[in-house]
Image (cartoon, rainbow, N blue to C red; front, side, top):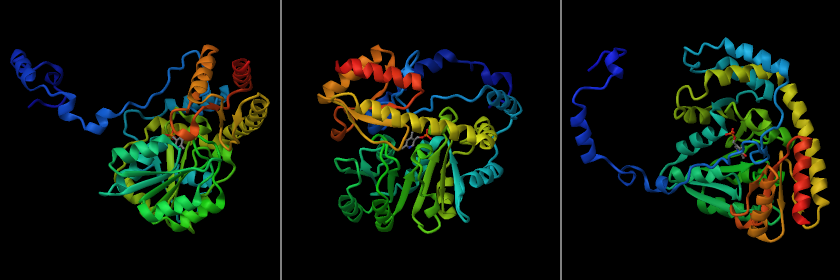
Length: 385
Ligand SMILES: *Cc1c(COP(=O)(O)O)cnc(C)c1O
C-alpha cells in the first residue's frame, strides 16, 4: 500500500517484467468481458462537420451577443473549480422552477442533457419483463436505451401523416402494459405535434408513466407542464439544448416528487458540472435573448417550408420544431444522392432514409441562419435540375 499522494502513486512498481508476463497469459478479449449486445452496437455517430454549414443536429445557429458572452465569461471565471458541484443545487432549481412556471407541488430533476434523464427513467423502471413504448419512428435514444436495459421496446407505427394511430396505441398499451411511454412532442424526426385528444387518451389509459419530451418547446408553442398537477403519471422532459445551449448539456425533468425521488437515487452524484450550472444560472436572467432567437427561427422555418414547397418533386412536411422533414423522389437512392450533393456544396443535413420504412427518401434539415437556409435551398434546387 502507498500513502495517497506519495510520489510512488505515479511511479512504476518494481518487478515490471514479471507483471508483463502474467498479463500476457490472462489478457482478456472483448468477447470475454463485454456484453454481446454492447459489442453489437455502434457508437452514436456524430458526423464530422468542420467547415460545413451544419444543419444536421437541430442546433440554434446563433451565438450569444458579445456583451453577454463577456459577462458570462466573467461569471464562469469565478466558479470554484477546486470544489465538487453542489450536491443539490436548490437555489438554481428554485429559479428555474419560477422561470418555467412549474406548478406548485411539482419537482425538478437535473440531468447531463435530457439524454441522461431518459437513461435514469428507463433504468429505474427496467424490472424483468418491463416494456417501454413509443410511437415510431421517433427519437432513437428511447429504443436504444430501453434495449440496453433489457426492456422490451414497443414501437407503434405512426399513421402515414405521422399522426398518432390512437387505436393502435391503446391496443399496445393494453397488450404490453409499458412501464414508460415516451412521446416526443413535437416528434423528432417528423416535426409534428401529436393531436391533443390522442395525447390525453394515452395519459388516461397508460398503465405506467408517460413522458412528454418537450425538447423542441421553444419552437412548438405548446406545453403539457400545466397538466402535471392533474395527471399523476405524467412527466415532462425538457432540455436547454435546442434553445441554443447544446454545448452545456443540461436537461430537466418535471413531475411529482415521489417519482423524481426514485430516479434521483440512480443519478450519478455531480452529474451536472459547476460550469454548466453557473452558465445556466446566469442565462436564466437573459432568456429573452433565446426567446428572440427562437422567434427568428420560427419565422425562417415558415419561409423555408414555403420555398421548399415551391421546388418540384419534394414532399415537405409541416413542422412545429426547428427542423423540417422532406421527402425527395426515388427513395433511399434519391435521398443518398441529395445528401451527397448537399455535402459537396458544403452543407450537412441528416439522411433519415434508412431509419424507418416510413422515412424512405427523407432528409431532415435544421433551420439555420437566413444565409445558411438560402445556401441549402439553392443546393436543393440544383439537385432536382
Ligand atoms: C435532441 C433531443 C433530445 C436530447 O437532448 P439533450 O438534452 O441534448 O440530451 C431529447 N429528446 C429529443 C426528442 C430530442 O430530439
